[in-house]
Structure formats: structure tokens, C-alpha cells
Length: 73
Image 1 (tube, one colour):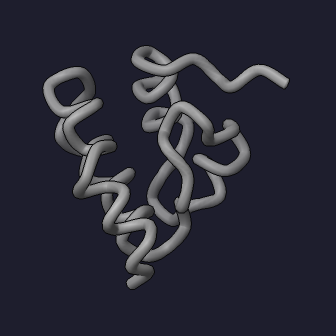
Image 2 (cartoon, rainbow, N blue to C red):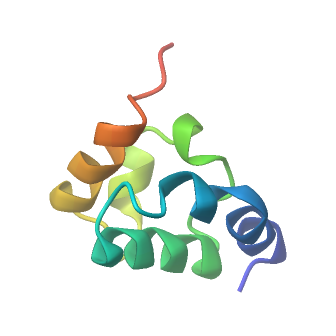
């Protein structure tokens, strides 16, 4: 487990999506932070970064993008 990713998840990212996307998508994203796949805030993750994590597929990405659009740039 990566401390930075998990700390970010617990500090802010979980609260930003809870109740806005399905429990399954929330769990998949949380596991990504726990494994260290994600180390940036959700609104800074590119589509490719989201999809690169285990168990985060197109359905999880669609739900995430319904709350946070893809970062520009």
C-alpha cells in the first residue's frame, strides 16, 4: 500500500465522490489509491491513468467523468 495515495483517498477523494457514483466504482477507485495506482486527486487523473488501474474499466471511468470531467491540457 502506498501511504501517499491512501492518505489522499482518506483525506479528501472518497468524500468527493461518495453518493455521486456507485458503491462499486467508489470501491474500485479506492482500491486504486490503496495499491498506489493513483497518487493524484481524481480530477487530475487522465482517462488512461484511471483505466490503467486493476478493476477500473470503462464503466468506472464513465461514472468518474460524470462527476469530474477529464483534465484539460
